[in-house]
Image (cartoon, rainbow, N blue to C red; front, side, top):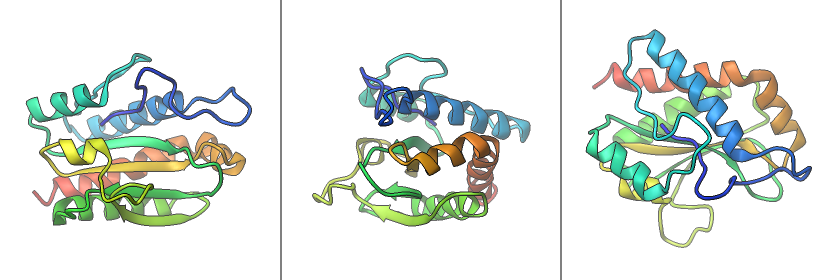
Length: 178
C-alpha cells in the first residue's frame, strides 16, 4: 500500500491547511494495523512523511513480489463528493474484484457517495494511473473522498478507523480467495 507524497504535498484543501499526503498516510497506517491484526504481512512504500517517487513505489512492490498494490489518495478535483476506485483499462478480474470488494466495504461506512469502480484515469485519455500500469500484481487506486469537499473531509476525520477497517476487509476478502 502507499500514500501520496511525490516531491510535494499532493492536493491541498481550499483552506491551505489540509494536505492529501497527511490524510493518505494516516489512512494507510490504520489499514496496516488492521491487516496485521489478521497476521497479514504489509509492505509500505512509505511509513513516514517522506517523498517516494511513483517509479520507486512500483519497483518496491514488484521487487518484493507483493500480492496486491493498493494506492490510497484523496480526489483532487475542484468539485464533487464520494469515494471511487480506479483500476487498469486491462481490467484483470482480480484487480476488478479487489476494487469492488474494497468499494463495497467502504460503501457500508459513512461516505457521501459511492462513485463506483472506474478504469483508466480521470482525464479519460486512454492511459492508466502510473501505479496501476507499472505494477505486476493486481492493483487499484482508491480516491477516498474529495479533499476540496468539506463534508468528505469531515466524514474522513470522523470515520478514519471505519474506513481503514473497510479497506482492510475488502483486501482480506481477496487474500482468502487466492
